[in-house]
Length: 128
Image (cartoon, rainbow, N blue to C red; front, side, top):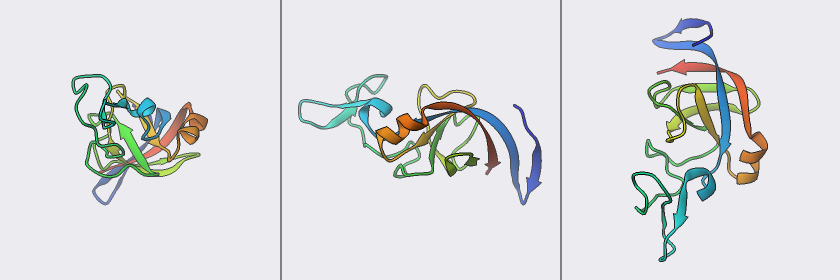
């Protein structure tokens, strides 16, 4: 891990370079599809075919601007980040393809997520 760390009232602040990708709540970004009853279900993985709550994060919150998905063994739920070109956010979600120093940033539309794309950014991290 690269960066400087400093103490701040019980939380740790550091600067880390991560690969940041945009995502939205669509099936293409989040791995779901509709079944024959038009219900959203997981499209693949160990929960394939099971009902999916669209727009709800792994921590149970509603995904919104500022929601970050991360590898929670690296950036636990509640970790705050300041991302240049995006703004501030909190880790509230995770995904199977998000490992190590990779994060996904939530956008309201698929177009906005695609415009962000995938980029290397140096973020300020404030751990809980």
